Image 1 (spheres, rainbow, N blue to C red):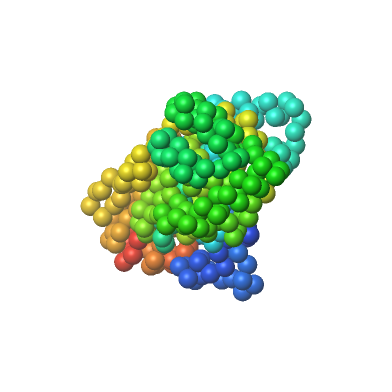
Image 2: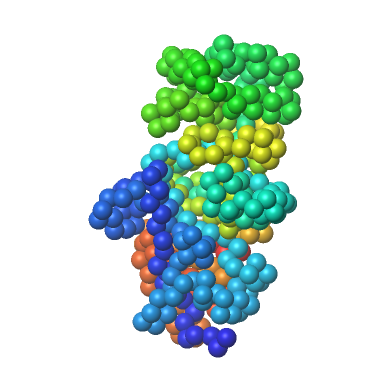
Length: 395
């Protein structure tokens, strides 16, 4: 490819209007237009086929995927082996809770995808588990207070809560779990709760809600909150199994393969491997494959103090180190002509003020809060200046 004159490309990003999204958060934070007051759930920044960004090239707009395909090596640089952007970058604004879910690891995704392909299950079939052959680790960076669930609590604490609940529908399974407080025992108990059906499930949920009304702890407050969104859903038991977490603005959390989690409320940046693979575990009317979910879930208890991901600090920069090769994430606060080197494609997002970019070729660009810029690997080096905060997604 003969490189175009530009090293900086302003992006036009798809906004997904999922029902759980917020009608006002993106407008409040970024002045994003929403004249029809639709739920603006996610802004997608990347080349995903279900919501590919467009970039400005002269007087025209082209799909980012088409631009990348024109010269994968030059544009993706070090990440060219992925054949596309290895990550998807998002603004996520949740007014209502998303489903409790688990993502498979890379090997599991490759195997599961191949098996479903061989079985002839259509990729858009609602009962399909694997939409692609990739894993989906995620990092979230809170822009507002951001409530979530993430990872199993201490096994004894789980058993104690269910003992106090004293549910006639669950006590037999609980007795087995209390006799085997291990990861295997938790897997069996978790499966038993999710497998409740009919009148037995209705009775279990009713007992849970009655008990939750009498409790003051955060997890029971969350159950009361969730019942209005997902009445009679077996996922209402999730706060008894999982940690409830509230990130403050500027705090981050990493979610690895196999870890059950759910986003409850708030707005954040999210960066993930480029995948749609989701195994659901409640708070959803969608398909739940309990056997596949249990097989791909890690039942190791996580310590609450370890859930938050602290950055490595460097001058005015915060670098979030993650155990995957698909993405990196950094935040820059009030940089002035700070040089950055690039050897892979990346996306910059202005959080709260306009950002100025300068390239050694003399090219300059200014973009405003809520806007994103795509920078190809061939740019090699540029500088950033802003009186606010800049987020950087790269590989």
